[in-house]
Amino acid sequence: MSPEDIRANFDRQSMMATLGADLAEVAPGRVTITAPILPGSRQQQGFGHAGLTFAIGDSAAGYAALSMMEDGQDVLTTEMKINLLRPAQGDRLVAVGEVVKPGRRITVVRATVWAETDDRRVEIALLQGTMLPV
Image (tube, rainbow, N blue to C red):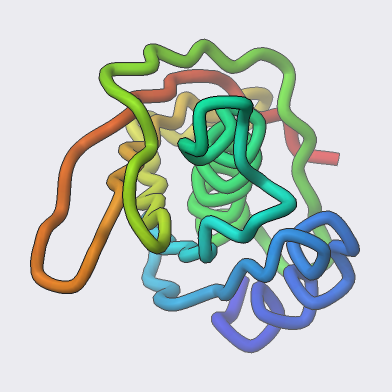
């Protein structure tokens, strides 16, 4: 699928718009999504909520899978595991999704999520899962 089609698909996601997320990079098998850690997406201790981390990691991995598919297809997550490594402390999150193994029926994906503040970047989560073409 073309980068333009990926961007159009991303623009239809109201959840990403609500989170202030941006589709930063699209390449075959690799997608980067960024999102600010807004006041409305923090947990009780002031860190970025794990839901924000999961949402952009899952979407980055899903769009990485979609980038390897034929025009007119779409994807659904069939399962996704997350390891939260440390608190999401920073100004924004950066999620890089990658295809581990493309397939005709399922595609194995992973995503790494970092928290950034100015020149500091800290890895905060790893996700791995499978995507189903629809």
